[in-house]
Image 1 (cartoon, each protein chain N blue to C red):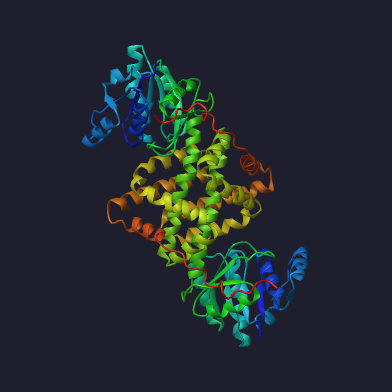
Image 2 (tube, each protein chain N blue to C red):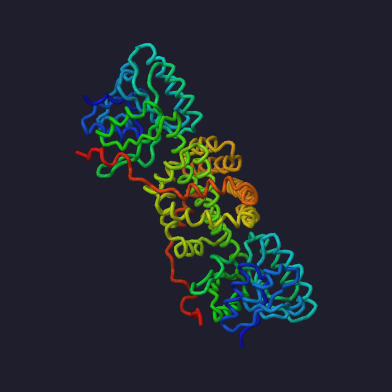
Length: 294
Length: 294
């Protein structure tokens, strides 16, 4: 029999995973309490059914998919219900939290009698026709989550470690989202100094793979910058005791905070970044005059 | 007639550019005072001839190619000679300095009666059979430097601006060397947390262009980290008034300082980075068991 899966909350990622499981015949439960009309409509379209918290606590697999700052709160909300009702799910914390936070959640969940799995989602929400993101899992109970593979979810078991999946998520997101912060910073610096075109052309010539990467990932950040602030702070905490790395990501958090404000009002920086990436490279000016080597 | 070119100092970049000019029949002068025996031998192999400072001040084109912290000092050393002897070269500051420093050097040089060109070298030292780096030039006198194209040097004129070439160099190096700092930070973080292999495999699968970039650029940094410290500080200064960007690069400067110390003693971090990049990716574990979409 297919496991019953609870997904809280039905955000962009949660509802897309719910949809995929539903399309493979899984029963997918969620909580629609306090969600906007648009969010409720989306969850329904994705085949997710509203249940009370007590009912959700009886699911077989419970996926916590929330912003990093809400991960502990969600575990605190459900742990007493797991304890009280005796029948507890495998609780998978899928959030972009640092390993210390993952272990704190593990302690709360294990104390309630539920099984804990540390999870980390790498990749965007699954869309029809694509394999979708990988759900990395670690901890002694992680093999139980492989039941979701029948639902089209790419579950990958890492190890018995109670925070390995979070550590992987932090190091991967540090590279991809840190690079967006770095590229944005330098493209804005070049634009302020009147050298945007020359930088674009030099990148097109000597680092075309990076320019292509920026053209895809920087605009994708605009609407998400506000969500990335807390994730950058988690990555900073993950990097302890490397204080330089920590400051690096604390700066990235502040940058995303600034871009999120800019996205809401003015958009001067968002527009400068868009204009940078909308440029075209011209042929190298010296190509026709350079002497070949003798 | 070909211009006589002075290149100070005959370091890795300066002597390689000297060699290229010499191989095209240019007369290339330098100062070997105070240089190591190995450095003197290299300069001679590259066809560079020792001259006194007074004689160097009479060259047609003077290329300043020194570590960023020495750029102003070099201008101070030669400006009085340009002034005193009446016949002054086109002085090209080719160094990785921020635009404010470039303008400070411009003021010193212009006051001496010499012409000033802001330069920025993008790419590694020219090697036989390769086009070599681009020498970006800006300022009203920049077109004079195109005479070096006959010497196989890819000179690119940007604009009349007295610091545009430095601004371009800062924004480009900020991306390439900032990315090496970011990647090193995260690869070390993953290694400390036991998730190096999983990160390597995930990158190989979903960001192969970045992993390939790291495999080339991170090891290339090991022997140069000590030189990059001052360049990161120049980039931080370049980014004013973006305080988050500034902190980003101040952290990168401290990281390179730490890696340079590590390179000199212990090499624990250098070896962790090498071990990270020496890994092999295995096939995805869930590939055989994942259900296709219905």
